[in-house]
Image (tube, rainbow, N blue to C red; front, side, top):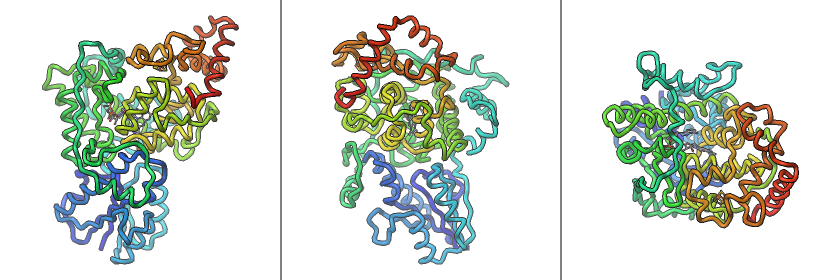
Length: 508
Ligand code: FAD
Ligand code: SF4
C-alpha cells in the first residue's frame, strides 16, 4: 500500500531498519512546526540544532533514493500542527497506510496515538530501535519494589556482557564512583572542546522572520553543535581521544575557564538519535581495551551514565507519566528568579553556570545539579518554572530525560523516587569542587552577615523547614546530627538570614 511514514525531529536514526532500502511506495515526512517551536520557550541553539539536523537527515534520505516530503517552517502548505499536516498529506497524496515511530515524549505519544486511532487507514507504530531497554522494562523489572538505578544498571550490564568477567563485574566491583570525585588540580590541562563551524544563518533568519520567540545567543556562521552523523561521531572520537582518560576523575569538577571540562557533549547527538547508546558504549569499551591511558573507573563511570542513568530515567518517565509532570512533594511555590534568564547575579557560581548555558546551551551535570538545581531547591522554587527552564535552555533537553532529572533527581519533587536523598549542599561543596568562590562577591565561609554566601543559610533553612520529611531518612543522618548540634540562637540567626535573602531573591 501507498504508505506515509512520519519521522519526528528527535528520531534521526540512520541505522533504523526503515531506511535499509528505498521503496517507491513509501514516502517519509519531516516537518518544522510552530507546535514544536512554541510548547516551551527554547534556547535558539536548541531549535536551530534540531532543524539543521532534520534538514541534513532529509537530504541523506533523498541521496539514498528514498521519497521525502520536508516542510520548512515557512512553507505555504505548512499548517504548523502535526495532525493537521498529516491530514493534508494523506488527502493530497492518497496514502493508504500511515506509520510512525514511537515518540519518546508523552505529549507526542498521546497526540499520535489518538490521531492514529481515528484514522480510517491502516496504521502502525514502530520502535525507534535506539534505546537498550523498552519503555515498560523498568516498571516490569521492579514491580512494586523501589526503583534503584544501580540494580537496573547491573541487570543491563549482565544481559549485554558489558564490562563483565564471567558473571561478575570486571575488576570485581560494579561501581567506581568513589574514585570519581576529584576537583581540578593546577597541573591538569583541560582541552579546548572540539566544536564545529556550521553555517546556520538561513535557519536563524527563518526563525526571526517567522517571529519564533527564543532566548540565548548564537553565532549563525559558526554553530558549534553536531548536526549530522559524521559530526556526531567526530564529537565522540574527540571525547575518547582527548577527554576519556580524565572523565572519571574530574566528572564532578567545575571551573570558570572550562565550560565542558572532560565531558563528552554527546547528549544532543544521542537524544536526536544520530548516534545510539549501544554504539557509544561499545566504542568506549573498545577504546578502553586498546588504550592503557583509560582506567576501568573512567570507562565504568561513563558507561554508567549511558546505560545506567539514561535508560533508568527513560523507564521512570514511562512508568510515572502523566502524573510525574505535576508532582511537588515539598510544596515549593516561589517564582524562578529573573537571573536564571540573564546570568546577572552576584553569586559567581550561578553567574557562570547560567552565562555559559545562555552562550552554549550547555552546562555539565554537576553544574545543572549542584549549582542551578541546588539553588532552586534550597530556595523553594516551584518545580514548574524550574522544569520549563531546564526544558528550554539545554541543547539536549527533551522531556523524557529532562523531567526525571529536574523534578526527580534535582528538585526531589517526586518524593524520592529517583534520588534517595535531596541533592543539596552549602558553599563548602561548591568551593571544594570549583574555583567559583574565589571570584565571588559573597564569602563562602560566612553563614550570616552581609557577605554571607546565600547557599549556607539557605541550606540549613531547607533542612529545618523540611525536618519532618527528612529526619528519618538514614542517608541524611549526618546532616541532621550537625544541625542538631547548633544552638537555638544559631538556628534562628540562620533562618533570619535565609528569609532575608529569600525576600530579595532577585537581587542576590
Ligand atoms: P557526559 O557527562 O559526558 O555523560 C555522557 C552521557 O551520559 C550524556 O550525554 C547523557 O546521555 C548520559 N547521562 C549522564 N547523566 C545522565 C542523567 N542524569 N540522565 C540521563 N542521561 C545522563 N540530560 C539530557 O540528555 N537532557 C536533559 O534535558 C537533561 N536535563 C537535566 C536536568 C538536570 C536538572 C540535571 C541535573 C541533569 C540533566 N541531564 C539531562 C543529565 C545530564 O546532566 C546531561 O545528560 C549531561 O550533562 C549532558 O552532557 P554530556 O553529553 O557532556 O554528558
Ligand atoms: Fe557560589 Fe557562595 Fe561560592 Fe559565591 S561563595 S561562588 S555564591 S557558593
